[in-house]
Amino acid sequence: MSYIQQGTKIYRRTSFSFFAAGFNTFAILYCAQPLMLEFTKEFNISPTTASLSLSITTIALAISMLIFGSLSEVWGRKPVMVYSMLVASGLCVLTAFSPNFHILLFFRTLVGITLAGLPSVAMAYLGEEIEPKSLGSAMGLYISGNAIGAVAGRVISGTLSDFFGWHIAIAGIGIISLVATLIFCYSLPPSQNFSSRKLEIGKLGKSLIDHLKDPGLVCLYGMGFLLLGSNVALFNYIGYVLTAKPYSLSQTVVSWIFIILIIGMFSSVLTGKLVDRHGKQKILILNLIITLIGVCMTLEPHLLLKIIGLGLFTFGFFGGHSIASSWVGQRALKNKAQASSLYLFLYYTGSSVGGTIGGIFWSTFGWDGLIGMIVGFLIIAFILTACLSKIVLKAKHIPTVKESC
Image (cartoon, rainbow, N blue to C red):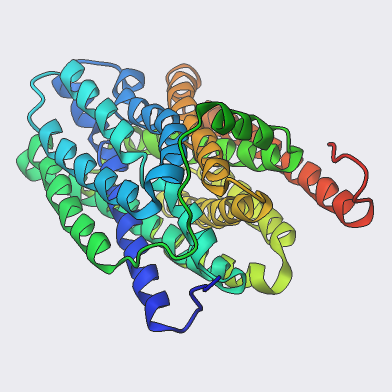
């Protein structure tokens, strides 16, 4: 097989393509998050109900990824990703014309379904086309594109909504995403190491079940669930805190606080390099520790310390996600697209569950209760990491014994 090696022109083209793809995906996905305050006011709904504008998109995305990951085994990696991005961008523009919250949720559901073709296939493409030694860095660049898109989607939509309303904000994100789609389509090289096969539902379903029988993969899937569930719960409701007393910040200022997510760009790239040197397990634990320290710091009432806590949380979150996601692609020996789809299914399900349950904790117990929920999520993530370490150790020393945790 011919792999793409780091330092070559085609590696730079591929990395740039997936940077644009990650930007597209997360800009569309998270553009609704800073608009929840606007939805609460305009549609006279609760913060928990407003959070559905993001939660319903992510759960639709999660379920659809299981389908698109399997379809890419038949139709090919690049075609599925390109058409997914194109249709999702168009639907994002249409969402701006929603006359009420129910129609908005309808369009956001369709966006989640169509957007699924990119993240469910991206990691499989990288795992097949990038040489193993360069995969950590390539995955880090893709995740950094996710971070930039997450920042841009929130900052641009939040700022535009403050001046022109949420309709213009969402339409603007859709237009930008169409441009990112064209860049991706033009720059990404076709697959070289992919062989299509017939769509056999029975075999594809069996392979999904086989992945769930691997306790190591199950630990990684749980990790993704807990990490994004914590992230979305934190950032869904931070706007409500900062626009209220004693901070009383404007919507524009709160939107620009989301720029702190740019830290994820550096975190994911740095983590990829550290993993290549020190191994996945040690660096994953380090990132979880940083995440825990950061979320606890947001309990501090001083605004500067609260923002520093958000920064530390973001650093650890993106680092942990880049390790877990790339580890899935390496651990799955076959049907990598499906293994990645299962990871992302749990990852985005965590977003929906964490974001919605977080609203209940926020409404009932306030910010302290929400942070308590997130700390609980992270403690479970530490337990899964310990189980994963035990599984890997057994595989190295007693390969004939069935892995268990």
